[in-house]
Image (tube, rainbow, N blue to C red; front, side, top):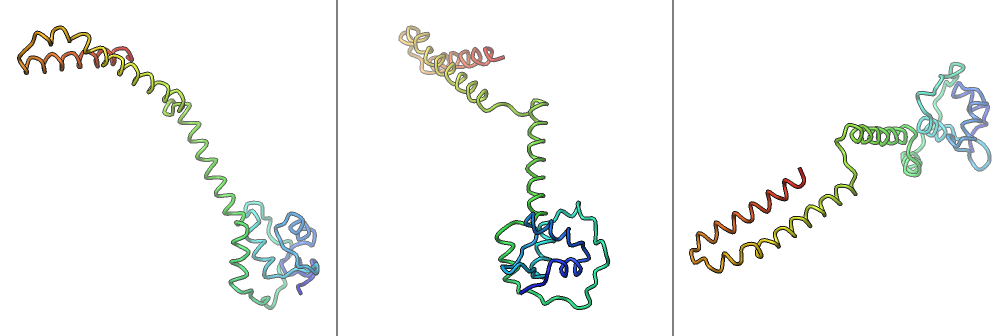
Length: 172
């Protein structure tokens, strides 16, 4: 059994409407009997409230004695169910920063579209294959008459180099 909403508000130094709002938005849990466990509620309030939006207490807290401490298992169980507001916000901010960086890189031309790169690579490979496959037709008649192994190697190397340079010149 916990304490009433007004008692918890007084304990926190907040107005009862602020506590009601926190309950309605799901930032503070309520027990099954409608009361509030101050330890669970304080942990949930801290974890689920944006620190940038905090106004501070409306009154000075009137606590003279600390409420009983909850077990570490209760806190860990609550933490494992829902990430804290601060953690969720930092994750969101990190992803937004990554998206902004990607947009910037695209605008300055450092990033290319995947489809365009894949298409260009495929076309380049196809042109290379086609040009290399033409080499035997160009040199076969000459090779038949040749008997010097070194001369054959020089001719084939020249034909391959010419084919590759032709492909490189096409793209430029």
